[in-house]
Image (cartoon, rainbow, N blue to C red):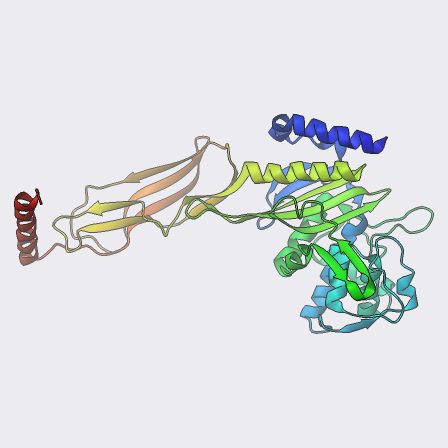
Length: 396
């Protein structure tokens, strides 16, 4: 019955696509969600992002961070070999199907942890780094405090429920975003790992696709992590890059997180809506570009006859595409020679809803002096010669 309901929901979403994208419209299906800029942390869309929630296998992002920090410190390397022990093979849930005595590199286990959400692979990494999972968890909690994630509480490296009371790792959705943002900034290689489409090991008779539901569906998506427990519901941290268009927009990486969906199908549908909302409604627009000339001024009596003018400072901003933002250019073209380098000849302003949000001087970046008399005479005869040639040769 739940599957039928999820299918009906997907049909409704498709049929009412325009309405849904008008105001997101996914609140009733999730415990919380966020859409935000990975670079600046600007929040674009949000819902209950400061409520503490169970995070299930999203926990593995923190485990990944600890492992990568240890590699950065030189304490371990991606090529280190880890031998699988009996305790590791007993870990339940999503699995890399590890067997006692098998040998894997840190890199292989990291990939298994992120790509197929292998609990056993994550546990093996935790034991290798800290001796016991308990010690590794201490490192996780310490790192959370270090990067300003105050509400985070980790009980294990995997996100699995503990005991009859189903105790689980927790933090807020705002903090999940902060964790994802921190990892992408400090260990950008996570995106190369997260976009691996599947893991196949023929010798082990193992094949598993990436758990990321949008990786093959939306080309811009390249991460990051999924999760599920009964308490947490179905969760998904996605990230995607919107390619900039030359002179118009800059590259923009957004992070979209949905938490607490009741069904896998619902989670995937809500995540798709949120990601596509970001793709369709936001861009990092270039309003003033200090490298692009605003205008070309002519100085017939100057040693340079044509000069480009530029804004002194560029300005770009992440905006919603339908925002009312206007660029005003005011240039004083009544300028007498000579002109010194970097002379200010006007002002450019960017206004949002009538309020100035950026202001920059407009400059002539090179000196322009009066041309010598013989240069002016030379130009006169060149123009005269061209006129004669044009007159007598115009019919050829």
